Image 1 (tube, helix red, strand yellow):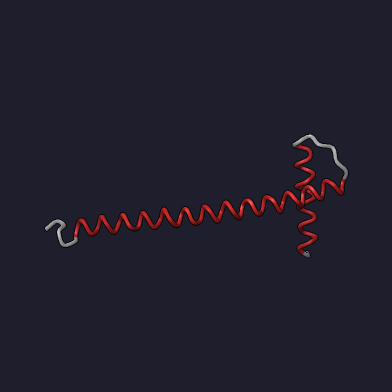
Image 2 (cartoon, helix red, strand yellow):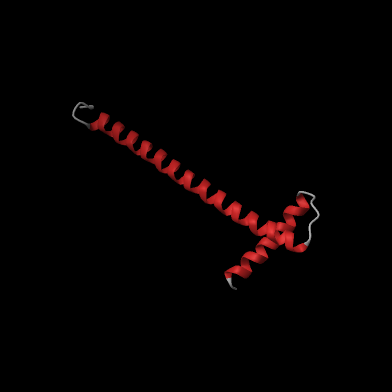
Length: 82
């Protein structure tokens, strides 16, 4: 299925569902445009959220890794337990 057709079908379904949930009466072309625009906005928002979460998780992992190395260094380093 061509990507444009796929986006149009998903956009139409999303627009239909969103207009029903928000209790808005629109015609079919407006519903499709709302759905496609909403899909684009949602895609950008999720990409940004996942990018921020990815960097945040990377930072948390880096801090945790550094803490493990500091603990190991304190345990078995030059002045650790003997």
